[in-house]
Length: 114
Image 1 (cartoon, rainbow, N blue to C red):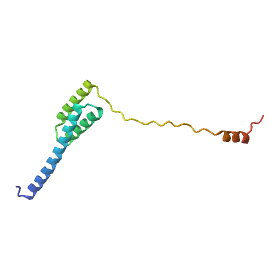
Image 2 (image 1 turned 180 degrees about the vertical axis):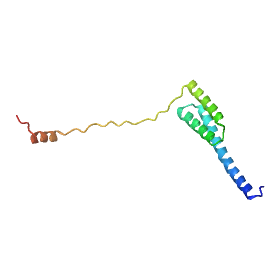
Image 3 (image 1 turned 180 degrees about the horizontal axis):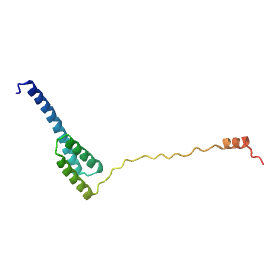
């Protein structure tokens, strides 16, 4: 056990950082497994995003992240990635028709002069 005050603080800090690092590591590994088993666009982009984040905060080395992303890209090219497009409901708007009564009133109000 640390005795000095700064050593106690360092221990607390290292425990906190260790737990955060392990959470990040677990997330990117799960995303890699998903992307390898089912290489859809969403799974691949999530895995790449998490790898970049892990490399940025020094959980993994930047070259390891680059290597893993490269392998995912090769896998995507090999298996022809399926893009999941959201289904849009298209609503057709019909233009409002003028009733025959309003058309008749408009003709009476503005008769053509000859």
